[in-house]
Image (cartoon, rainbow, N blue to C red; front, side, top):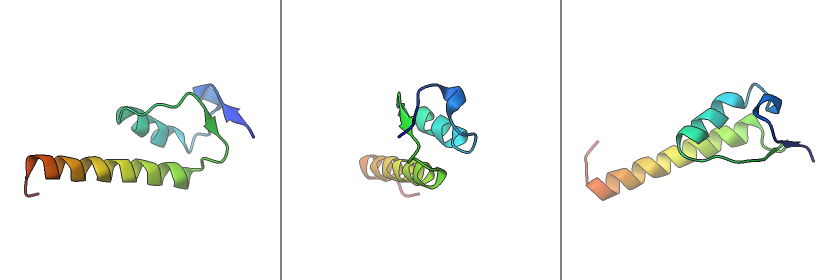
Length: 63
């Protein structure tokens, strides 16, 4: 199993999604080659959806 320890080693297709995860406050020191673009994209979308639902329920806003 290969680990990416340096951001320059990360495949270009993953870079935007890794950046988005970091903007959500999630940073991983190591990524393995099993994390493909589809998995990372779904992770980002699920986290954003969860945060939005939590915000909505906490502040009782109708959006």
